[in-house]
Image 1: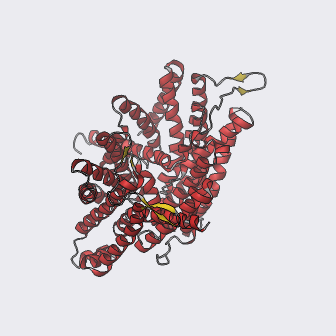
Image 2 (image 1 turned 60 degrees about the vertical axis):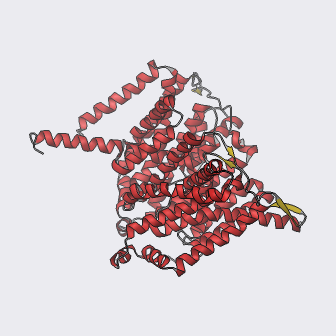
Length: 289
Length: 324
């Protein structure tokens, strides 16, 4: 009984940290730019595919793929922000959401054109493959690695936002665009930078997903983006601290749900999302509206 | 556009639709039915989006409510299509009342996310409760029984017969939605979009009006779902998925959110263009994404809005004798 609970917890933690990797970029972009980016799931997918390509072209060096792959996706993110998204900031919400949705359709099919419509099975990471016994049962090493990476990313983002000059400017621009621009911050350039950085986070999430999900499919971004939305919402849109906690809760909820209430595991996630929106729309850490 | 010309246009469209049913091949008839069903879905949806400005990602749940309501009733109780549609529409309406009751507390992004959450709850129930809904297979073998009139029955089993049944519901829906849109109630809804504070100061309950618009649009989604289930003789669990909710939004956007005819024109473009693109390439989503980008970046009035502007410009040019 205890072993099984420990294992369900571990599975939940790794799922949660994995969602966090994707939700972090989404939350950062929403917090600063105010745009909820459907295409973030596509960046995640592109990250996975580019990593895979770097892996297969440059030899089986996973870490090289994880560095170069997301950089390619950053170029895509730059184009999306600089030439499209920038022009809809002043428009109503439907236009902003649908612009990012248009990119979802576009990238999903582009991936089919470039890499084929079928799924690709992905290689394991040397040194992190296999599993180790924990309390009598095997647990994949790579999932433990993800559980460790999640908090590191959180720590890195916290340090960047709270302790560096860059972070101060980003926080200033997100709390008051006009004031930041009045004191000499080039807000539009900053928005581009933040969007590209958020894209990079999503793509790294995709790169790390290559060995985790084991299969690359053209629609892989769509399930992830909805989970990331759920996490971003229950943590309070724009709050990184909230998204981290939200990811942990959703990860654990879904793994316990899958284990003990398989009929309702997806239902539980969305009922939690609705409940948070109804009773505390600002999320766990958001300030009262 | 002048009033008399509008009537001519409406008459021409009606004659065209009747002619399709009488003379066209099965494929065109089938496509036209899909256009009309999507148009009912989108017109109802645009009553919410175009009038009140609320963006819902949960209307697929009501579409599925109509489809599964009709499907379950037809399999377990009676195959009478009119009763089945009634059951489907009532189920969708009840769902919309429940979901809407919670969702209209918020607007903007929170409304969109809340409707997404409720819609996906319905999807997850349909997906996982296999014994009732058939899970990922959906409900199969929904029959189109004749409408019985006591002494005789109107058969619906052939595609051509069913076409006129869909056409009847389509014309009825367009008429009803037009009346709602131009009633005092419809005007208050557009007041909500422009300035909800003022509507509130006028002594009207903003929430109740939003809820009413939500339920009406959900009910039409249910009607579309019922007709769709009868057309395909099965139900698809993904008809409740959030990505299906995006369909009426895209259709309205292509045609023009702020016009009545927008969703109609958008439905035709959506279905026909998809057929054409799929003939030549496997990648219709790619082309569709590009079209969407063009519309959002440059043609925000949609096709109908753009045409109206063009028409007005031509008229003002010809009136002022070539000197605009």
